[in-house]
Length: 427
Image: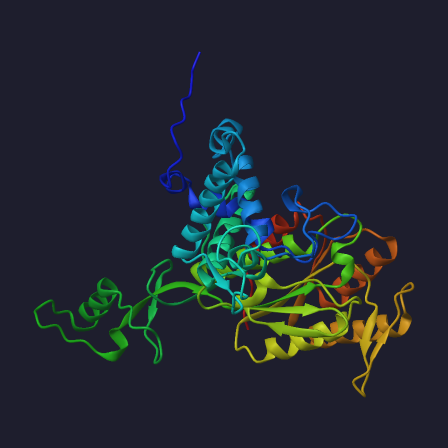
């Protein structure tokens, strides 16, 4: 029988924790979208915070403790040994371990802190119960850095590709050939503007056939030049439209956080494998706005309604500004269009049923996207019969695809669709 002996706690215990594994387990907590802590809802890792989306140091410490237990890096026996008799000294040891892990996350560049100025009162101690340090744990907020966001995108992408059975991925292939670096096709005669990827053998062969001479230096003319052809790599502009109306966190399920994780995975995929592509993110609710990718991790759900038409209008404007071979919209939603921006700027809202006016204007925007050569692929997180009919109509007009999926399969469907669009005729 194996026995474990635990020595007195030392700060080195925090150094033994796999920081990247810990951060991966914290992904849902770090990307929470206003779902955690809602009244009547179960928070992430079983934690109940006073406010939804609690980003205080106290909340982070509790999340780290739960994540360590869940990942197996911190067994109940280790926790018992660390806590000891449960006195103040033991609690201080546990608090120090969690503080050291928070500091490691900060030192490694995954998190940063946003602390309001703290001025102790005339009789307020610096440490201990009721101290300024205890108040700071509630008031100091943490935020993901660009490195942290990129890491979560990478881990999500690896997980999604692993579920698809893919170990690698490349650029968008097309059946067209063009002069480039990789020689995948036959040679062609050089034309002005081609990349000078010279096929030396064919060029010299042309010279010898024309002159009948093999002496050096050889007589080369413009017509002798042959260049190798490579597969033409197309570029794609993508706008990811995320529905952030309140229905995305209702009915006991958080649908917005998985959508954000997919967006981070797409960002990492495009930046590392398709550097010529572009990705922009639009949140649509009562209205619609573009958000920087750096702020995506902290995006929250709200306001209440779903202004799909305004989101499509903004997406079309962003895509038309991109000079790419392909333009597409990936729309993730779980509800019917229920809002519309009027000509005077007022927002018309109707949450009861499918409002014919809202539907008509939305389909007009879909038709405008089609006329602009923009494909719309819709990922619906609901299966209401009326919504199914609406999504099918959107797909028919835009000649795009409709996927009726869940939060568990959303990422796989989106990546499969993105990666399968490898061959396309480019005019």
